[in-house]
Length: 593
View 1 (cartoon, rainbow, N blue to C red):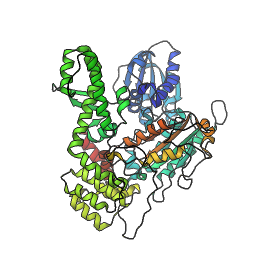
View 2 (view 1 turned 30 degrees about the vertical axis):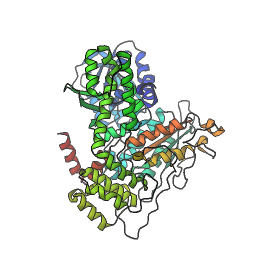
View 3 (view 1 turned 45 degrees about the horizontal axis):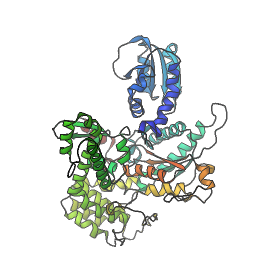
View 4 (view 1 turned 90 degrees about the vertical axis):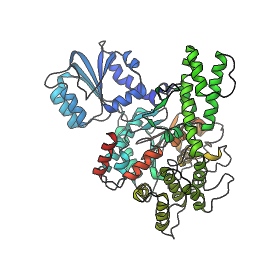
């Protein structure tokens, strides 16, 4: 498999940047300076390396907001978001005295007229190019994107939010730029919910903005719908998946290990601090990230043994970090081969240590509560009997809170009296917002004794091979498979605009079985299903996009959200929902101190 920067969304983004910004640069042979804002810095870092820029005659990459020395003989490329703050910083570079010979300006999105007029007023004679390249989303992985906006969760779901409408508008604009970058004009659908209407509002905004964007193309013709479908769903649609302890490698590592900005920090056996980037430049990470931790441990040991066998006589016994360290000291050439394997051996060992200490015992109860039946398929009649051993065991408060939430989700809500007892049991009287605030996402937490909630029907996966402690399948996978098979209920998933031809009719093939190409399948070859979850996606849900794409070769599934979440970050976000804007601001200030 190619590295992440060579395929998928990252490759498409880099190609788009090359076809616009870089192509313009090539017209002039002189070396240039590239000036970026924080968002475009992250965007470029995700899809190219400095060497890629150097080969395109970009000699220096600068920060728009840092003090820079004037280089009046050089031309500067500005790649930035169209915000008032960015435009002011740009104008300051040319007024009163220009820092550069000329400016090539590229905006990630539509630039409002007032900002554009301001630039013209002060810098018109220096601006050689001013373009909007429609790219205000972040490609995280080959099939995953975000809006790079974790704060959207508070803006959308907090009862004290002042900027919900503006946030939904911004996300809609970002989704339009995703579609434009992919050259798709999809049919738009959303998950209907009687309690909460954010998905509907966002879907309407996206549909309206797409129609406006594609009203006339460069040739003056109206663009028709492409073979793509965009589904928009709320986070509360599946509260279980982001709370469960997951045992697939990527999801497990990000849940249990402290990994910041995809950087895994660890200590080598000689005590020195090391760090590794967990991204798609690491081919082993791509190969292992969606596998169960048991398979990962086994595969890494096999890989290391293979290298060891090629380099010196067969090692006896178990391969450990210590034996690897000794071998690496003796053989410099071997060191290079084994480094990435060592990183994953270390990370897998870290995961397994947490698993053996606590997580293994928790997982059985969590799976029984989530699935509603035990390993034998026997229905859980009294979820409290499943939960009680977890509450009585000295697990950490966060783990107990997660188990209590799964218990409540399994019943679609509980009574006030019962909830009070649970909160006392877990000793979180002063932190009950972790549980109560789920109501802001439309998830039932407190119900009256007479209330009856009908749970959605799940796909039958009893014939699929799974590990006993990984029986739960994220609900989004059912949605993806149903969408690919044209089985989504129109009442539950209303269309906002006409559906492309490829997604009409019946007779689609199963996403879980080997299939023969049908005429519909051939018609949909190369089509895309884009799923957007409002309020954050979990790593297990990201995995589903790859699994469904792998099963149905005719359709690529891309998943995105405002941001990627872990169980810890989601619980912190949930708790913060009841804070006033000032309290939330203070908390963030303290956490950054």
